[in-house]
Length: 95
Image 1: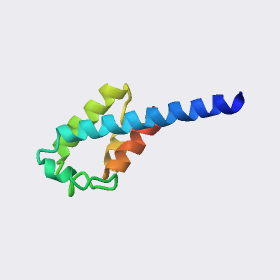
Image 2: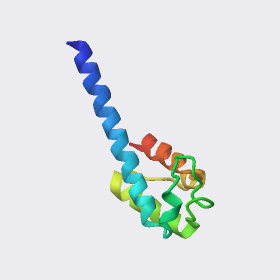
Image 3: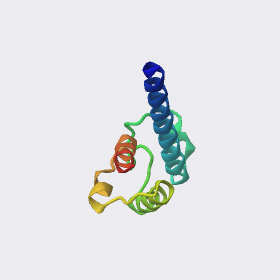
C-alpha cells in the first residue's frame, strides 16, 4: 500500500511542476510579440536574445509571476533570470 501512496505523491508533484512550467510559458508568451521564437522552444532559451524580451517586459513578467503564484521575487532573483529554465527554477524554489 505504501508503494501506491508514494506513486501518488510523485504523480501529484510531477503534475504540479508541469502545470507550473506551462503557466510560466503562458506568461512569457504574453510578452513575446513574435510567435516564431517559440517554434524551436527549449528551456535554455535566453529571455533577451532568443525570446526578444526586454528589461521592461521582464518587470511585467515578474509582476505576473508574483500574482499568479502568490510569491515574491527579489531584485537579486530578477537579475538571475536569464533563461526560461532560470525563471522556472526561481519560481519553483519560491513555491
